[in-house]
Image (cartoon, rainbow, N blue to C red; front, side, top):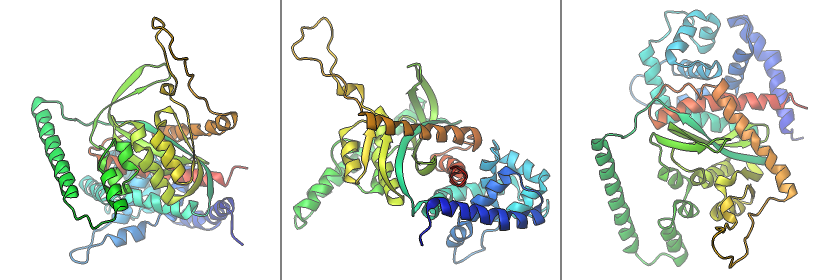
Length: 404
């Protein structure tokens, strides 16, 4: 008999309470709620397998990588702002230090080793792969009703090209990129005509049109490679209609019922939400099976509607104001005004579930370290955020077993 997702969560929680937590308490001492969450994350995430797969065949093997990865998970769970604060906590908290894998205070590595290990985890995308493995373990047998898609601002203490010399260098890079794109287009035109017309048309469509139009004919890796990831200035309207600016990045999330983050993509702060919709829905479709996709009016584009239906989903997107016609009062009325289309009552009822993405964004910033960003570069920023997303995913999955 196949177990439901709720029964799987209940069995896993029972195993933790009856077997794992008593064993840990006998070795490291009493476990509070945060330590129990950390133990749950370590139990679900295949940390040892992921780290072993990255070991080089020659040379001295890296030491303490499992302990260091556990420590960075603890940093996200405990909502510690800096790595130096994490080391200070490890020095005074014997239970946490032993749980991570260091039996004595002298075995604790230097701060520079923490920094090198974090850079290695960021380069190899270890947190992203751990999160993907946890989603595959916990959500593969689950039919998800709704996926809520939204983004959140990630302020960063990082500079972006502002000086005249840096702007000139950036312009030179853009010119080089344009030349390379033109060269690719020429090579495509000069390629052999032996290929079928259908495949040639898809290749041509993947290189022309707007970014959203190109994404409909690209593979996932090609979509993600075109998205800017450098630090820059972003703007967003608040609830009062005023623009708020920040310097840094933007984190785009797909959240399933139960407030479980399924997929995450990091872009520059200036990237519009609609540019990431198709990559996110493609990534999410590869991981879980879901029915409805809930998005706000920023995602209201014909290509996004069509691609969602092509993936056998039902898009419920708040209509944008541009769908209607506005006529200046001083001009003569030639054509009747067309009001902005509205969602049906059934769609409005489902659309209310989209607020779960905002609650996930709030918890990620308030409880799992997303508001304490002290690293630079897109790779490290994403690694820092994904450690928090991983802990939040396990926490929400465990809570699903407690709800009625």
